[in-house]
Amino acid sequence: MTEARDPAHTPAAREPMVVITGLNKHFGELHVLRDINLTIGKGEVVVVLGPSGSGKSTLCRTINRLEPFETGSITIDGVPLPDEGKSLAQLRADVGMVFQSFNLFAHKTILENITLGPMKVRKKSKAEAEKDAMALLERVGVTAQANKYPAQLSGGQQQRVAIARALAMRPKVMLFDEPTSALDPEMVNEVLEVMTELAQSGMTMIVITHEMGFARRAANRVVFMADGQIVETGTPDTFFSNPTSHRAQDFLGKILSH
Amino acid sequence: MGELFSQYNVLGAFGITIVLTVLSALGALVIGTVVAIMRVSPVGFLNKLGALYVNLVRNTPLTLIIVFCNIGFIVNLGMSVSDDFARNNLVWATIGLAFYHAAFVCEALRSGVNTVPAGQAEAARSIGLTFGQSLREVLLPQAFRGAITPLGNTLIALTKNTTVATAIGVAEVAGLMKTMQEDRPDLMVPIFLVVAIGFVILTLPIGLVTTHLSQKLAVKR
Ligand SMILES: Nc1ncnc2c1ncn2[C@@H]1O[C@H](COP(=O)(O)OP(=O)(O)OP(=O)(O)O)[C@@H](O)[C@H]1O
Ligand SMILES: [Mg+2]
Image 1 (cartoon, rainbow over the protein chains, first blue to last red):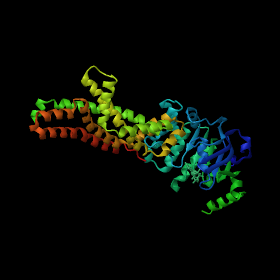
Image 2: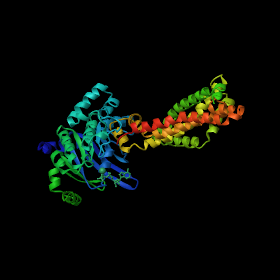
Image 3: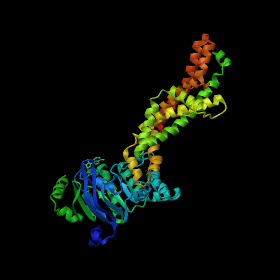
Image 4: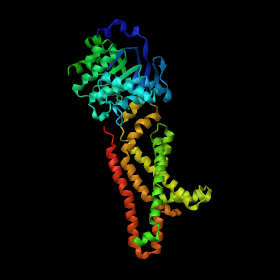
């Protein structure tokens, strides 16, 4: 994967996909996001790192407005986030999201989990949606489980299905919030492999993860957050070998010593 | 005991009880679902309206509601739904029972909604479903499955509560029981047994079926 770190792929050379400007958000008294400015280019893969409580999840969730924010703006492929309503629902369909706890629809089969969005939001026919769904299940390697229910699958399989469910909407950007931290260690790699393959296919991705291997292998850029601010950004190589801020040095010292 | 059956239309009265139960159960299910949706909706005004409904209706004696339906609508407002007097009473009793039990259906459904983890609704929104679609496709189907037992309890209560319709002259079982007791005080015990056993036959299966269904349809997490 030297290609992913090619200078030609640095943000400046890309058209912007997600543009966050002057973003501020509070939870009551707590100022969780402080004046965040971040542009993510088309096809770029950004890994977000930072200590617990630094606001990574909140940032991720404001990007598809699962969390509202007070000031600033977020645009997806040039379109600003609309307020609550039908247009917001449409825009969310363009932003895939993968959660730490999978969140597959528990009362639906694996196949139904994947076809629901394409049928209800994209108005595809059942046959077409199922055909696409089977192709996606093939891609993430869980075709044999198509007619089972989520609870019958391993965590790794569920998370791969969750990725397929998001991809079924043909999103412009995919958000991952610690997709492997609820998994047993032996299942982490099967999910990271799917994500790496997705990164190579040119998907724009924002990934919150502490998996250094994935960051080095697949990310174009690492964004380090602390106390609701972006403290440092850089290529994985420079960030991991020469972090400039104290917070980042401190943080890396802690996770690398594990 | 055979005497009671030949002299009085016991089965007919139970028939009316069943009709009253089924119709008002359907009404309560529809109204209760609407109120439950109001109570989980993100619109503050609807929220409060739903809560007001539940607290008002749940805390009013059922007899009062049924009599109110009768007097309030038929006598005072002249809102007759049918020229046939008996049918009119039956309809208003159904409406009163439905609105009353809707409050309990709403609360049963809300307890069902609480069995659904927040992540389910977030996942639904994140694939672009609207609020209505998330409700229909994800939240309510899981909430209903989680609410089968309390819904069954509400249905059992409703079945027995139909006896209140006697107050406005609906010819269901409790009304017949009163007539029989007045006519045949000598048969007090058999009359009591027939009515009691009849209700057990009606309600026992509801409990058995809902217990079975709540296990069979339980959402595995
Ligand atoms: N719904 C909420 N209401 C109030 N405070 C919240 C809420 N969600 C998060 N917070 C607080 O906001 C801060 C940032 O939380 P966030 O989940 O974004 O952190 P994070 O960087 O993802 O942390 P972690 O690595 O533990 O997942 C934390 O202090 C958290 O307690
Ligand atoms: Mg988090």
